[in-house]
Amino acid sequence: MHLTYSLLTRMSAVVAAITIAASASAQFDGMLARVPRDANTLILIDAEKMFGSPIADRERWDAKRKAAFEAGVSALPPDASSIVMAARNDFESGRNAWELSLVKFIGDRDVSTVAKRFGGEIDSISGRMVARLPNDQYVIQISPSLLGTHKPARRQDVTRWLAATDKTSSSETMSPYLLQAYGYATKVGTPIIMAIDLAGVLSPTEAAARLTEFETLAGKQEQAAAIVKLANSVQGATFGITLGDGVLGAIRVDFSEAPEVSAAVLKPVLLEVIKRHGAMVDDFENWQPSLQGNTFMLKGPLATASTRRVLSFLELPPALAHSMDLAGSSASSGTSASQLYFQSVFALLNDLRIKPKTDGYKTAGQAAIWYDKYARKIDQLPILGADPTLLNYGSDIAAALRDANSALRGVGMNTSLRTVNNNASGSGPQASYGSYASGGYGYGFGATSFSYFNMRSGDRVQDSANAAIRMQERVSGASTVQTIWKNIDEATAMIRREMTEKYEVEF
Image (cartoon, rainbow, N blue to C red; front, side):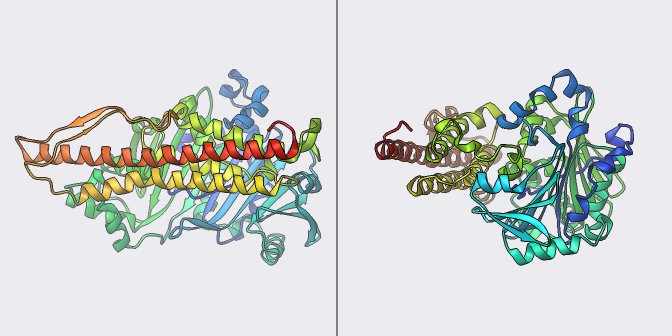
C-alpha cells in the first residue's frame, strides 16, 4: 500500500442515500481498534456490501472477482470481506512514516504461507505468529481470519503497536476526523471510504506560496486571498463511493470556518489540486459543487472507467492480497523462481506501455501516477530463489520507472513556474512543434504550431507564449520518458539473453 495521496475525500450521509445497515459496524470488528492514534490517512472497504450491490449483481462482479483483482479492476482479494488501510503521512516529504493494512477473510489464513511464498522469516510478537519479509514489512496473524501488515519492519514498533491496540477501542485511537469518516462506513454504510486528516498541515505562508502557481486563480487577487485563508482552516477531506444501480461518488472538504467564496469558485481550485497530483478523474469535471456551513461538497456519477481508475489507487501489499495462494505455488509447473520473476516484470512492463492510454489520461501528471504504481508492483514481487543478477535488474527497472514518474510530474510543475514568470511582449520567436509520440507507448502530444508575431493584444501574446511553454515542457517530458523506455527495453533484452544462457531455459 502506498498512501501518498495529496487529497482524499469523504461521502456525506445525504449523498449516500442508502439504508443504514447495523451489520456494517460488525464488518470492521477487531480492525478499527488497530489504527494507531497518530494515523492521518484511513481507507475502509466493505467488500460484502460492494459486491452485493445491484450494479455488481447486474455486471456479475462477484463471478469475476479474482479476474478483476488480477486485472487491477478491484483492489480486493476474491475472498476478502473487509479491508482497512491506514498510514501516517509526512506531508513535507510526501512519504509515510508507517503504513498498515488489515484484511478480514471469509476463511482462515496462515501467515506461514506468506513467509514461504515471499521468502520471509517466521517470528513471534506478543504471542502472535509474524513473518518478516525482505521488502521491509511484517505480516501479522492477528486472528485466524484476520491478517495485517506493518511497514517499516521495526520489531519494537510492531510490538508496541500490538500491545497498545490490544487494550483500546477505535474511539480511543483514531483522530476525531478519521473517526467521523469511520461513521460513514459503519453508520451510513458507504462501502468505500478514503479520508485524510489535514488539520494544521498548511501555514498561511505556505498556502500563499503554493496558490500563486494556480492557473485558476491567476489575476484573481481577492479570490486568491480568500482561498489562502480557507486553506489554513482545512480540517480534512474524504472521498466516498456508493454502489446502487450505478456508481455515485462524492468529494467532501471540511474547514474550521465557513468559506468566503462560492462553491463555483472552490470547484476549479479543488480540481487543480487533484490534477497537480495526478489523481484527476474526468467525471469530476461534471460533478455538482455545493456549500453547507463549513463543508464543501462535489458529487456526481462515476463511469465504469472512472471507477476502475479510483479503485486502482487502493493497493494492498501482495503479501496480504495473495495470502490465499498455496505455499510453494510460485514454483508450480516446474517453473523456476527466476523465470517467474522475469516473466512478472516483463508482464508489468507490457501492461504499463498501454495503461495510461487505455486509462484515458489527459495530462502528464495523470500518466505519471502509473509509473510510480508499477515501480511499487515490481518492488513487491516475490524474490525468494530468484537470481541475484535478475533482482538487480528488477531494482533498476523500478528506479527507471520512478525517474519517468518524476519527469512527467515535472511537466506540470515546470509549466506552472514558467507561465507564472512569463512576461511575453508583442514580438518574439516563432515556435513550431510537430507531432511527438514517446516510443509508440501512448504518450503522444499531437502536432501544434504557435506563431506570435504581430499579435493584436497583450493577452493573445501571453496566451500564445504560455501555450508554447506548455508544449515545450510536454515534449521535454515525453523525450525523457522515451529515453527511459529505450534503456528499459535494452536492459530487458540483455538480462533475458544472459539468464537464458545461464540456465539453458527460455526466459
